[in-house]
Image 1 (tube, rainbow, N blue to C red):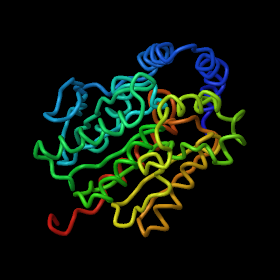
Image 2: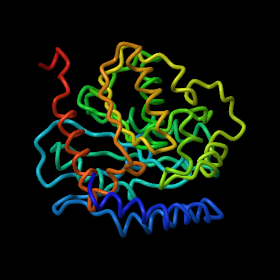
Image 3: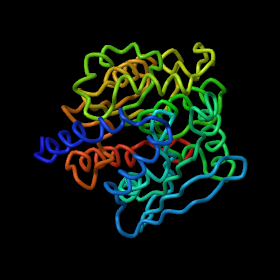
Image 4: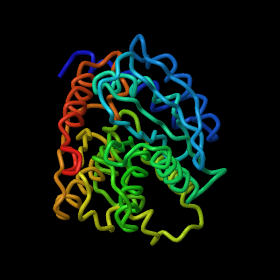
Length: 305
């Protein structure tokens, strides 16, 4: 592990995590994260970042690398506990991934809680995915992914497509996905002090804001209780000191038990969604390299090979 990792963890533990705890309103969380993202995260030179919209979907942010060598489109759903974050806070990391894969990235905007509770985010993500397909991009040329709550939305979307018998993407990936909204994973309490980014209390508050009065038995809120049989290959990563460690472990077991090929990477003592820190952290760049290699190696459907 790098010396930078130790320094970054110390900074996050002493500055960013307390700042998140002190935030009194969702607007404070959004403003603080947007400021930190602008300071820390920078896309590669030559990356084009453009606001756009899809007919029938919500607004999107399109990230295009300097050189395109792939027909794939990465459909990426940002995290932020359903309450904060935006395509802009995550687009630098996706610029790095886009460069490595040689593919465009499309990042949907979705409505945030508590102003817009469940199923607003799920609906917006699904509409944008279907709008992307309707625009002429073949589902088999789409790879879906997301981080944290966006990872949960990613696998909720995948389970919804499977349940409705709709055309599937070529693959799906998640950085530290937040998929157990019942907060039953042992790591939620075991790692409460070890996690240098997420506060367990604030994560629980965020879930309450998003779920609100919804029926918690709704399958879109119970990704770990859905059937992933027939899903495309899955790639997951998580840190062993994260409160969401057991979410990723449970998701890995679920998809594997459904017969789905899954690549699972559990790293030691790295912060929540560490690829965001690609400008500073060698491990972040290594993880993006690994994911890019996995995406490029995804098998084409038989009809396209």
